[in-house]
Length: 341
Ligand SMILES: Nc1ncnc2c1ncn2[C@@H]1O[C@H](COP(=O)(O)OP(=O)(O)OP(=O)(O)O)[C@@H](O)[C@H]1O
Ligand SMILES: N[C@@H](CCO)C(=O)O
Image 1 (cartoon, protein in one colour):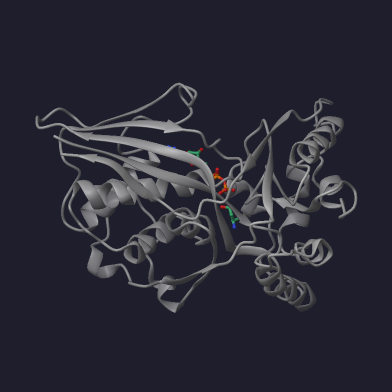
Image 2 (cartoon, protein in one colour):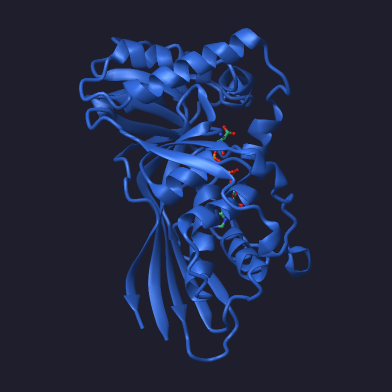
């Protein structure tokens, strides 16, 4: 019998202008408890009651964790072992902009890597994660931890379009290597993360479908200027709220997504000084969660953003209910713990 646990951190991404570039690992976890029994029982995946019944498939060819694991295993000419039992304990809300799909994908590749004895380095696992997710920001931060900037290189355009199932799995020799570069950067200990999580889901695919195919040069330059300043300003031991706030502004995605998140324009308009400690607010990933960066007063700031959501009415005339979490940055990335043989 083999037993171990995969601990996968959530992530926020974009941080304003860094669309599909910036990711930050957060201490809110997907935990996968893995047992490989010595008998031939069928593979199973179950969730603890934190995950509402019916919200994820328990069919191993459909569930994002197991289908990703199967894809990697089959790509390397093997499959998941019989006797595999997975119990998933997930604190990350699904479809809210905290990188839940990225955690399921990273959890899946880590699972196959261990139970199939592939021993692939994280760099290779990342090629598969990017192939499944389509963009590197969340998966890179979840796999590596910390504050990460990534780009996809020319080889990434050779990654096959994802088609699931044994018969569609592309052999590993046809999946390009080293399709990205991911750089871990310093994150100032003085800057803390508050997330305000509305109680509705927003699929990333929908939030991406409203974005334009082309942009004005001035908007691209606007984001390039800010994202470059932001990556340095966020590493400063004495962070400058005004500089960071301005560097969190974006013209590439948030404006186009505003109609999907009632209250977002009012929240994005908040400026440093509106409350002590507040630096700036932006969408977390593809939303609907709002990410707030702050240096103090975290609970009060979170409450204020909750009030703005509640005072904004949805199409049924109801306020937007939400909850707040104050999260530490997770520097470690995804780890295997509690190994027993
Ligand atoms: N632990 C999990 N187990 C199985 N499937 C999951 C798990 N977590 C996420 N998923 C799948 O991913 C979907 C959510 O992915 P989506 O990309 O829409 O949102 P997100 O990753 O939470 O947000 P964002 O990409 O903006 O950070 C879920 O509906 C589910 O299908
Ligand atoms: N960069 C991605 C993150 C969500 O997966 C987006 O904003 O669509």
